[in-house]
Image 1: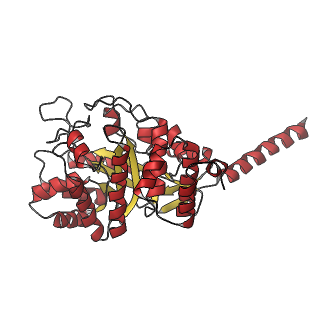
Image 2 (image 1 turned 180 degrees about the vertical axis):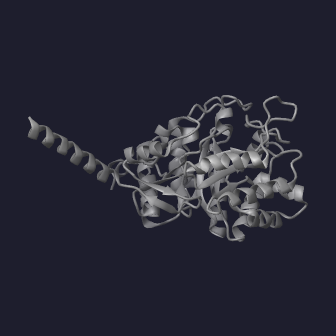
Length: 390
């Protein structure tokens, strides 16, 4: 037994995890409330190893494209959306998006991640045309697009049911829904930070419908604003329940709230401690989720590295151009290179794995030990050559 767990107040929860028992909501709240981050991390790391069965950590070579930031909503936490009257609003044509994708394909991307605001006037055909044009570029390109609220908006535009809308988008090339827009599910919190946005039930039903079509998606939780720790547990509970029903989620991506350019006053924004415990509790509680992603854009790459010892087994992607978090005040880089992602994973003692949209491995790279052995061998060869010529 890990030294930190042996003397911890959390030992009984650890024993539950070891025995394969599901932890309760009360257990999850205890984990959120503990100050024993070392023990919490040890339990989460055990849960990760038990779930994945390996010491891998994954990343994806992808590109973000936001087709427009015009939006009919005015969510208090959002720094991305603009009205038509705003000088810094934008929208791209399908041709513009194809051009961006063509350039990104030269960098080896396997996924395009595409979301935008709820545009007041773009027709439904714009979205299906965009998907088809991108698939025509490269049939292997996986299109991960649209949040649940965008799907509801598109269904309204098309005057079709959510199911029929999703079928038409899938037929046009949609591979996966994004998990954005979950925020916090509790009604009182949701109405405070995202008045007018879809309800928790609507968000979950969009993903339920997508899953019942045999498709997969990710989900999120925005933490560190006005929600309580109990609200976070309630949010995770609803995700776990839907996963029990559909088994359609590939991963949870916890998102740290960025307070700098937002209208929600927050006394204590998410700290490193809070981010690590949120990732750890998510890994322990969501026993039916294959993966937990440490989103480096919100955390910074160094903290995302640490999160690989607190239950995360993925650090997301190269991204290339991220707007939503950076317009909210994130100070992380706009992109990470493939080499930087691999280096960060190896430094954390994990074997880097390039994955696809569905968290399936594309390429397993050399382990940290193998790289170290090569470097030592090369160093020894240099010393031998120097001695031989001395």
